[in-house]
Length: 283
Length: 127
Image 1 (cartoon, each protein chain N blue to C red):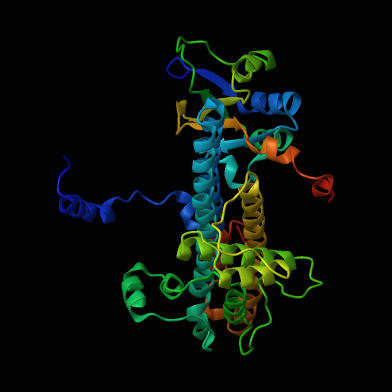
Image 2 (image 1 turned 180 degrees about the vertical axis):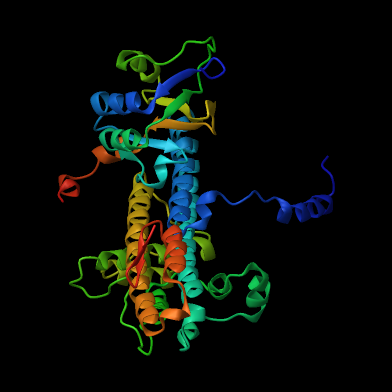
């Protein structure tokens, strides 16, 4: 005999209070990404290590590891989405009060989210949290607008799309894992005919199999971990470089509008690297 | 000496990784400082450089015998701690010492990607 299920449903109301403090790494998008990826990978590594050393129930162990890999895959992709979102929030917070153009129109504004974040003091979080950041084209469009020079439409492309660009593979890999994530999250891992059509286009194949459940093999998570971590570090550098340029232009136009040293120091902590604005370098 | 646990210098661990397992892939599960800058899993030689840059001292956390034994003196003593057991994968639970007190424990563990890396075709290693 178990208690009435309704009793358990009541206990679920405790879930929203089961929070632990954010780690120190959460104050920097890149550190937060690295932590998220390492935690997800650590779960996979620890379980696989312990299961393999026991060497028992091999078929069941392998089946459960397949399921675990799918969960870890989702955790890693979501850590990357959160990173992109946090990176955009840093840009908004640094630029919003220093420009008078319409660059924030690049972000969808949800009034309820805006109200909820009002007290937190981060317009960036309010404007970025409500949206999904799981399409490379859309992410490029948003960053292009956000990081435009004053009075310009923007030229910055975060994830290059030109076939000859040596980094084009980054956006292509992201589009692929974002599409696979979609299949796992929205269809319980089943690759539908629609997913398969998109996946075929993304991998440059005539067709991709449909109707089956995504089953990741050994090694797949290692490739994903490496690509997401390296691409995160690379994107962090690119956005930091562009931010320096835009803020330098703004500061040159109106030197009294903000203290370059204070803003550079704040951004240096958030990007985890030195930042120079109009000749003032921090840290 | 920290509560009777064994102490290991980051430099000695770096020497061991460099000399005894330079091409072995390792993972640091839950390590809070080096892993921020060092991509993981990493080969022993890369991890050695990261430990050397960091410096400091570590407490060995998973010793059953907690009688005071001081510092791990040399590479041979470290061999004893890191030699493979029956599952053929080496692991050591460690914690950074801050003001002579161990912080959160974490695991230095021979990574499962050692097998995955062997399965990669030769072109994967061309830069």
